[in-house]
Length: 97
Image (cartoon, rainbow, N blue to C red; front, side, top):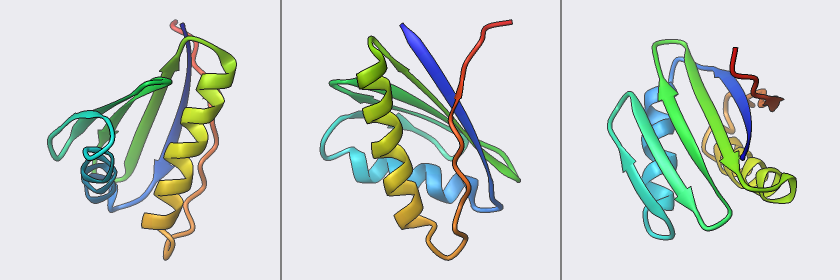
């Protein structure tokens, strides 16, 4: 398994977490509440965590190709939902330290 993370600075983290989760709930297995969520795609999964200033995204997949696909799917939808804020989404490899 390989993992990448992105932290998006926004005061609307919980709103975006819920919006993403509801949107993908029609296409994927989803669980969420206002502070955390999980979206399971056939090609990987995304954990979401929201606090007052940040939306944390953690993607896990079996291959680099699937990881990249999941990153693109989540980022493109978040960019659409948060278009007024023009969020900066920078994916970084996740190292368990």
